[in-house]
Length: 133
Image 1 (cartoon, rainbow, N blue to C red):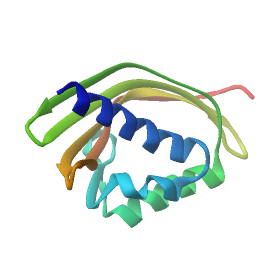
Image 2 (image 1 turned 180 degrees about the vertical axis):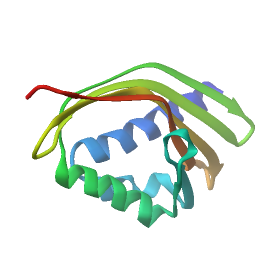
Image 3 (image 1 turned 45 degrees about the horizontal axis):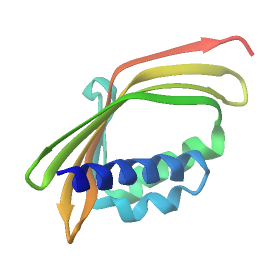
């Protein structure tokens, strides 16, 4: 179980490093082809790896992350399924405004071909507020 926990921690770290560094395509190996992302409050969804990556690319192209921290990471494993969540606090800037976004990122992974791949994601307890530039 500790090996799985370590593998999952490395997987989520690689996903987050990919979008934060602007190399969004590098997250592709960690995503299931049919991954689903539910929007906050379940107000819609994105289905499929290509669509999820496109959303991260749009954000990376149009926003600059100024501050980003993660805390309170939790990993629960049951057989070949794992749930990972962590609190995040991010300040980012777009052309016309800055916004602080906080909440909990929640990912579901499955063990497939000796590796963990993300199959589902959402953000809960999301709070967004415009801040002064």
